[in-house]
Image 1 (tube, rainbow, N blue to C red):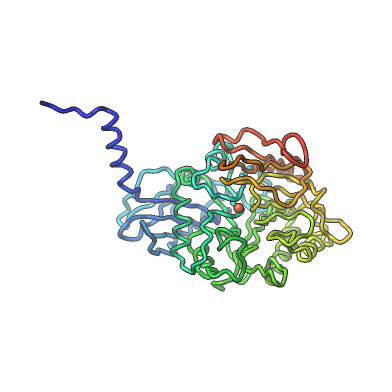
Image 2: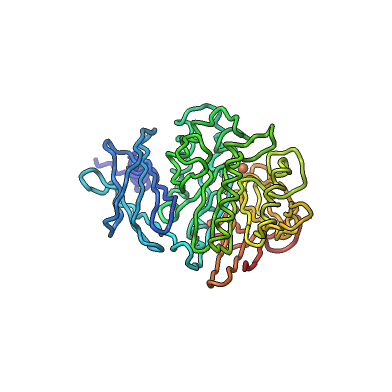
Length: 438
Ligand SMILES: [Fe+2]
């Protein structure tokens, strides 16, 4: 007698067999993107170190790291000699040159610095949940890259062991929706407390050195130039897309709560030099990424509100160098999406630095309201046990004379991102702002 398995049982067995056979490439992450260069890191399960092939180029590729990691090996590649504003396909190959898989992976280099360029990007913070539909929505919206403004994971690691950090990132990077986004979009990233160390962590974090080492090895970042070559230096970095400068300050690894400083003197000097260099290079728009909210009355908490003297110094610098119209803050940490047009964000002595602020998130977390108020409203309420999935979308249109910018808070729960969020507090209507910088 012939025994026949029902069709669904056969499908289930096949699916189990496929999932039991781990993919050779756990994840691949493109970052550190410039006009002619990109950094690619990947977890690859292969006995010998893998190589990177960029299709259609003879570009020199450098492997700078292969280090053991659970479930494979951490690889780090530097691709140089690329053409600006160009799409590239790439694959990982064995020492003999055989592709390790047939998954399609692409990225696009940035336009040449100084050339006017139109682009759109998505940004958000706070991924307590591992497989957020926000990442799918960012791809659907045609974002050129995703800017992660902190709390990549909530492992709150207090042990000074690099493997603990690798495992926390690995868990998120392997989740299907982020893994799929990374196959087409660069991910640029600055950390906040839960991913740098424990909750509200600072320079005294017991896991500080392991965390800094992991960031340097696992995250494909831009050059770390506050104290170049120093392994425990903070991870501030900057990059340019067309005529727009992005400055990502590290507000955790040198934070000194006793001295009421969010950054070291070296970081402060670096930030000021970056702002002046951007002005001197005629960048009409400077996005400054602050992982924590900027506005709100002085208080004793973990964000800029708790560091009002330091905040005022930066605001005064911006005012004194006539940069207020160009500097825009993108922030994270709060589990909400909110926009302020500068009405509530001027902390210079006597006024004069009304900075626009766009706060976006959470990628996957419960809602919370911080800082504020926000001229164009905030969206943050969630039911008990429910996560919000929100992000910010930024459109930049540069005609060579002026830059027109559109901010919109987006609903990501449907994995589409078409819906503009409406305000629940401080204002009514869509959380959206358009402005032009000279
Ligand atoms: Fe958070």
